[in-house]
Length: 381
Image (cartoon, rainbow, N blue to C red):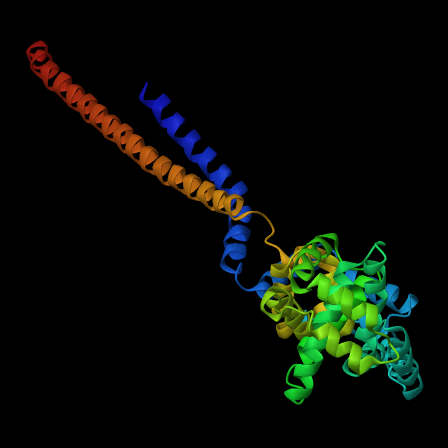
């Protein structure tokens, strides 16, 4: 019976140890994620370590793919990430990246991109964004967008309320940019990026829904209709003044915060990193997290978003699930310690009973030997 109890205690100890060993990796990861939940850059590092540990060739494969698609900026981002992660790259591969980057940074390429951004209002790199922002700073770009969408509104046709609101907000911010001698430039660039990303059809569904609600609140529609009815891209200054009168600055706080965050991403990590973020982020909170990653990781940001997607901006799991892993590990530890205690107690009890039985047996043997000695003496006489 005692031996059975000891065997059960040992089995419980082994089971607790096995459960603890199985839970520990998850609990350790959960603890690290929870400790980094308020630091998006640290959280991204944790996920990157896991992804790259399972596939070290992932970075070089992505560099090859980026070069094949003509995206030297993304390839450069992966080179920066490889350096940060201490992953060695082939010298020939890094030279190809340098050559591609030099080509895309040439004066001819920049001039072409600037002209494209200025005329079409579409930004895809630093050059085209410079042209787009230049057009918006001279109010031409925003007036063009407001007049186009405003005409649809006046005619009762489908209107892109998001582009309309962003352009109206841009006109108001442009005035502030001049007044502050460029102090509002990141906000101006952020509004342009969000607007152009929307026009290019690359804004996430979540951000389209959120920004659509926000921009509807910042535009006085009757006043805008009147401004558009009498406005023209041929009279940009007068039209801009009339449109700014239809802009409700007091309602634009949330929109301004998002634009500032997008501008921060563009300044820290580049235009394409900002557009990649707008493609995956579903709400303003995720864009704010992306801005913190960009300010910490700089040129690595595009590679991080490419590898992790929206996961770079989220907790790996809900806080409740992560906490449950830690709670499970504590229960396993408690069970293990309880099993050690029970095993120790039962082993001690078994050893004491065995020692007592051995002593009793020796005593009985000694008594039997003493009892037999007189009888042996009488026989000899």
